[in-house]
Image (cartoon, rainbow, N blue to C red; front, side, top):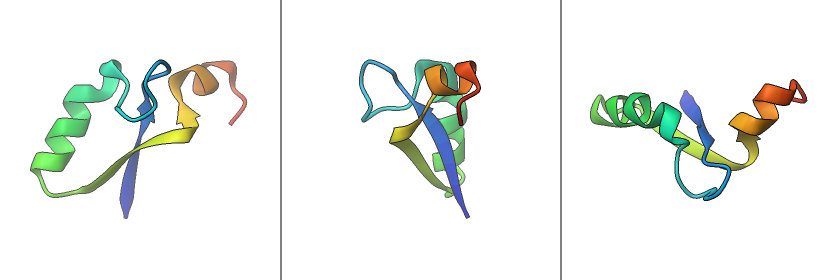
Length: 50
């Protein structure tokens, strides 16, 4: 299972700062995590167009 986190809207290669703590915790626990730069940003979630 891969846990996907929203990417930063200004830098799609990093996790949105609102989710940085959760992202780091998941990585430290050895979970498979990813910031999805192409289709999974917080701004898209806010609009409801997922």
